[in-house]
Length: 152
Image (cartoon, rainbow, N blue to C red):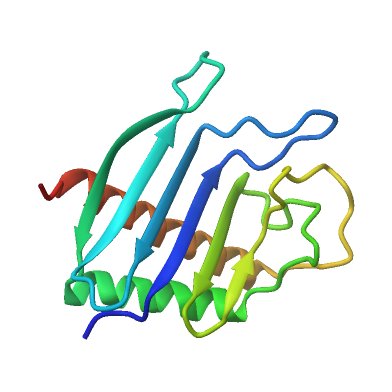
């Protein structure tokens, strides 16, 4: 059974300050209704270069494993706190996750213009930080599946 349609964006580099953040990577996933593939687009900035460069689009086959990963990610995000609007990297990982599910659930921990070094009213626990770490592992696993299993 495939997961419900969703859109997911992972951005490495969300903290800024006076200037907006300079992401090192942005990965975007989407699953359309009745699709057998999760579409993946990536932009990566090589060390020392000023801009993100687009990489060829990939697809991840919707398998039992990818369905379980996507469902686990959504379950984790549903229980994690966020700021509204986000202004601080409360998880201190310099990674933003943006989730939009077809069920109306959305979750994001970074503002489009980035996060500053401000103090937040939202306090996360060590368990929240571990769960966010697991969410990052899942997204990295999905990225690696897209890179490793390019489907023409």
